[in-house]
Length: 273
Ligand SMILES: [Fe+2]
Image 1 (cartoon, rainbow, N blue to C red):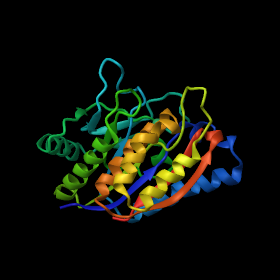
Image 2 (image 1 turned 90 degrees about the horizontal axis):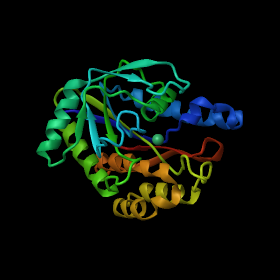
Image 3 (image 1 turned 120 degrees about the horizontal axis):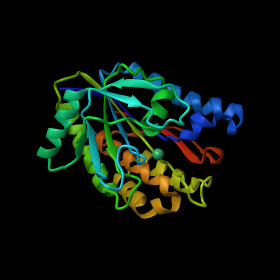
């Protein structure tokens, strides 16, 4: 039986790595410090494995074949896939047996994710891992959710996937301690005339609903209002999955700032599992 040592949620954007100095130095230091604090908290739980919930940005998957959910079952994961990302190239260790276990359990639980034994991680996974200072030798299992190409899986289904993952992880006997990092969102727009606009009101309401532990209210708000907060906000499906895995544990906001010059509402949080 594995213990879940922590469930973390964090925004990601390549702009943080490529153009960090587009915002005042004090603000950049504050934000990078918040990611590092998340990483320190994360590593203090001494996890043996890490589940990374993120999304693919049309790198591993394209219009010829785009899964709603995909579980990584690779021995290792190169990153980043983007040649233009200002990040050190690295190879993350994969926990192939854990990935295969989650895949089989998913089928038994009536989920039908795809799987990949050749996944390469893009900025979505790498940005928070890099800023948090996560050791690439910590074995990971990526779980990717389609948040970019409509039609996308529903918020509620993504929450249910998280509930399944939480149950399956806790029942797994291959490792003792597992952390979960869910990354994406919050409000942002990519490649639209609204790029650079952040709907802070959406982000604040969304985070407040989560802090209140209002799961039904969060799911409804995410479903009904995500369209007001930019196409990149569709990535809150990862937050829904984290909320499902948390199994009712309280959510604590660690950081939030609407950062227009990074095009994104930067939010970091943790479920107190
Ligand atoms: Fe993204």
